[in-house]
Length: 409
Image 1 (cartoon, rainbow, N blue to C red):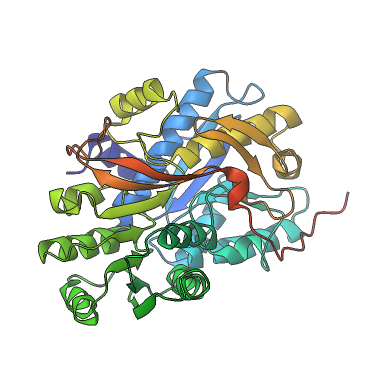
Image 2 (cartoon, rainbow, N blue to C red; image 1 turned 90 degrees about the horizontal axis):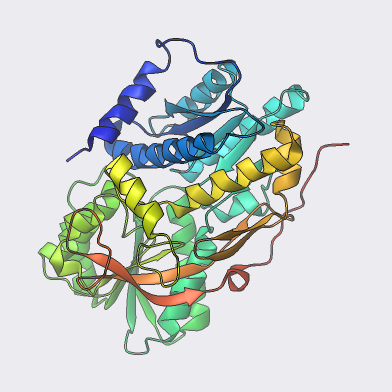
């Protein structure tokens, strides 16, 4: 059931163009993600995190004496619509944008921001990427104006395949993903890394399906079962994630499922008890990480938003951007970008650092499993995630092909 806060977020997004004018001294951050359609819940979840963090920062004095303002804009999961919303955001005075759902959309935004900044050297825009994980954004197509606060898909697959090295009893893997740039990257990385780290493991299936259009994954489960797969790997998210897992569990296909987003909004509810002990996720956060000292923050978030905390990375991103603005004594995009490069902070899970050479965050990462014995539960279910494996931030770093082009001083 959609939470009151979520309904409010969606209404706010629709209201933004007809509502009363906002204060001119706010620092506007445009959130350009899906707020309608099949992935609306995912987009609204991220928007809620940003609004909550802006309120926390504003309550503490804002940045350089100015308040942060989050503007929700619906990209309808369409790259062309994302560019339309980018233009609106700039017209509204936003010089910071954020997006995360859909690497194809992120690619369009990065290119558009680059062009805008070339044409408007005194009015530049900065892109805060909180979840679009195509590795190319911090490699061949890196941009000075783009900072990623999530691990890329290759970094996550490295962790998944390191875990597979410890599971010699698993012999046959099936890889299923969404047919767009991110899903294609996950598919390729799984094939490449399993071959290198588990040459004895057979990949009995590696296929893609249309993004957001499959209503019943039972035929895919039938193929996995027929192929004898004893482990499933998927980068699916949103309804593609929940429907896939539900189909597997409803049919009694109980094999380890290695996911990127198994703990996403609504997934534990859809998966149910049958998924306990089987569904794993590779993330920077779950609610039961040892030593976090984050209970009070999580309690307040859940009381205020009526929703689970999921994106610790949004907390990290907002705190780092605010810190950069304060240290720069400016909200100018270039000045803030220069402060963000190489910045480290102590996050609840440990020290995190924004790489200077490619603008990729390094942070501790975790593999965790859905459990019915977790202290903190999710999705109003009796289930939560418990840690299987912790990987320290420096161990997640990978070589980069980025040739960063910085603006002339």
